Amino acid sequence: MLLLVACTLAACDPEPMRTDADIIVVGAGIAGLSAALEASGAGADTRVILIETSSMPGGHAVQAGGFALVGTPLQEKKGHADSPEIAYRDLMAWGEDADPAWVRLFADRSRVDIHDWLTALGVNFNILLDTPETTVPRFHFAGGTAVNVIVPMLREAYGRKNLRFVMNARVDDLIDLDGAIGVRHRNTRTGKSGVLLAPSVILATGGFQSNLEVVRAHWPVALAAPERLLIGAGHNATGDGISIAQAYDVSLHRMDHQVTFINGLPNPRDPTRGLHVTNPAALWVDASGRRFVNEAADSKQTEAAGLALTPQTHWLIFDAQGRRKLRLRGAPWLNPKTIANEILGDPDTTHRADTIAALAVVAGLPAAALPATVDRYNRFVAAGRDEDFQRFPGADGVALTTPPYFAMQLFPMTRKSLGGLTIDLQGRVVDDTGQAIDGLYAAGELTGVAGINGSHGGSGTFLAPSVLTGRIAGASAATYAKTSNTVSRATWSVTSPLADTPANHTTGAVPLLTAGQLETLLAADRSGYWHFGRAHAVVLERKYTCTRCHTHGWPTGPATTTEQRLVQIESCTNCH
Ligand SMILES: Cc1cc2nc3c(=O)[nH]c(=O)nc-3n(C[C@H](O)[C@H](O)[C@H](O)COP(=O)(O)OP(=O)(O)OC[C@H]3O[C@@H](n4cnc5c(N)ncnc54)[C@H](O)[C@@H]3O)c2cc1C
Image (tube, rainbow, N blue to C red):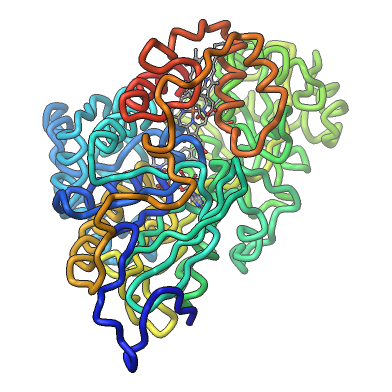
């Protein structure tokens, strides 16, 4: 154990340890934001630091969609009677090995502690979708993506005087002290490192689905690992929290429970990553040119069938009519023009021919099998019955008869972690002997969201439980901090040189930039400016004027004051 500041029992300094805050939250995704809001809501004297590696808070949620919520006014309005009992049964059945205690807690508290809490922050859940794994429609959306949930959370968080953000600071590890935890971090822009101290730390760094090494190391033993596996999760979902917590001999659970989509198209601008492709008009064929599953079945069945193939890849086959049903997601540059040019027009990404036989040749599929498969399917469509896979009657079946014909080769793509750090019902991280560790908490996808999903992720069962586990960890950490023998520094100073606080900047000193100067900055490929680069590439592509987002209150430069950050979050929905 490394003792930086603390005393030992034998020679104890009666002075309580001085820490930088009462609670440090690592990761400003939806789980970390929920934890920070909950902890800072425990009282004005509870001081919270939220530390984040990116320049932008929000995590995956800005790209994600809906929330599983139970017994809401929207469900009532639409005439769907839902209850914790029904939700409990659905989750246990779909998840197969879900944790009953967590499922119970989630089902019971979803309405008040997730829905009502978010609604009170200004979130408006106005869209409800039905999904195959629930007996009652339960998949709630706030307008579009969950950026519409993140922005109200940020508005509240930026207004809290006892909550400080430390941005562009990547946490590498924890130092176990006697009575406090040290969080060692490094500035992604300057490279400077520092340590922050608190009696309690909440880890909320997200899942590990962008770390193929960890994904493969925990690949389910019953399945062959795919030769080609694309990344389909957020950029910082590299499982850092797992390595950060190693110092505490933590216990991991369900690491081989991973949601792997099978419909990943290599992103032509970054072939390690997958674009999410759907086309309800398409046939799916394997490397032998034959269908292998009911394409319209639920994801549990289609994913199992796709991952059982040898090799684990399949092709979407559609015609000129079906082309209209093609949908692609997963990159900000996708739009009808780029899809036509860079996806459908790129012979490495999409094969195209005037006959199915010719398509088989260009796609490298068996020349006789593919036409036979399509003929057989077309006959089933004419007869109204899919004798092989029972796709219809039930779902759409449209014959493939209109050239040109298309073939797109898809690969498995990582998505969501259903395992990770084990936590108890108070959000405390559990060690490998089964003991809860004092002062160390975790929340969100880093915990695989606590076993609520079992072995199969449902719809909205990541975002909603991330809020719940975040709040639980935040409340527990705040209680723990109050009983610990430490004081947070009398003057609220996040002493680290990395602190992105008003005190470290001179308001108004930021130079005004022109679009030309912006291009020079973008070309510079600076460390720690990933989001700035991505966002302003969109600004230039769409020819936005700077003042669309950077108003007089936030000139073209970093947002440093609370006021500027409040202006900044008004810009998020331009792109997310
Ligand atoms: C494309 C896509 C669509 C999805 N759609 C849905 C959906 O519709 N419904 C649903 O319920 N779920 C969905 N999910 C899953 C859901 O988005 C995530 O499970 C959820 O957002 C996780 O939240 P989190 O706060 O736990 O983690 P994250 O959002 O990953 O946040 C973690 C934060 O920690 C930061 N961080 C990471 N490492 C460090 C470090 N070392 N130091 C400091 N900071 C660090 C990250 O930058 C990030 O801000 C989707 C996921 C994807 C990829």
